[in-house]
View (cartoon, rainbow over the protein chains, first blue to last red):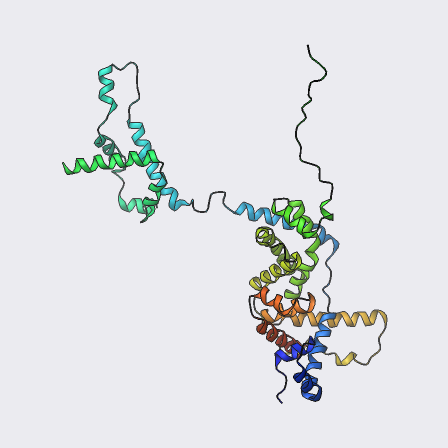
Length: 184
Length: 201
């Protein structure tokens, strides 16, 4: 009969060996010696206790853990994980455009006569786009790339999805007006 | 005219907790800690710090690294409290975290080939009192150093099986391996330990 395998020797140490293999162990000096050697070193390992640290170490241990937890918490961003510069940048660009459009729309001024007010109520979309073009016209694409403000593919679409319904409606209106003007 | 029957309005306060945290069991402490109660987590740390430290110490065999690893294990435990399943023992869960912290942080070491110490010179010698204690401690130092030289998986298996009475199945779950692999690692750990300690004929 073959000698005990490593698995069977571990089972033998736990007293879980099957009857036939136990019969082999009882009659085999080689397996018995091997088992005795393993049991001996295990018994010796069990006696090797860990030296206890000083009481002062334990007094400060909880404080160390708390400090480490606080440090980990401070390291984590308060911003939601999806809200990173890759999203914030195109959102910022869109926000700037909308802000520029809002500034360009004249406010109701009681001093202005009714006729002038009517004329100012609906400025031509082309004027808005012209102003945006003037604002960014002097920025070279290479300069923009160097400054890290070039929008990566897909991010503008994601930014548009973040707009409110009113903002999306306004953006649609502006794009349609610009396309109509370009065709004519 | 004011009358005496006016209802006195007192501000609402949290109900007073009559049971001190230190007297709560692990399950109640985990629930409180999950709700953000850091004092409850402090009690958990205080209750289990020694065992977690011992797991780490056996891995690295020095106080400095063991204290850092034990601290890291508790930080991870705090962050992972939501994943703790209350039907499992908190101590087993903390063992698992400590072992995984050790496995991730401790570099694999090559077992030493020279025997660290031999038992031959003090076998059959009757030594009493302090002298006997000193020799026993020297032998413990040699055993701890030998364990720290074992390959990581063998070390983890030996530590959990020998000092924390975990079953082969629990060790397999902790290390993400099979029961067969755990038994093989345990066998090789003992065989290597025997070789390192110079017990090999």
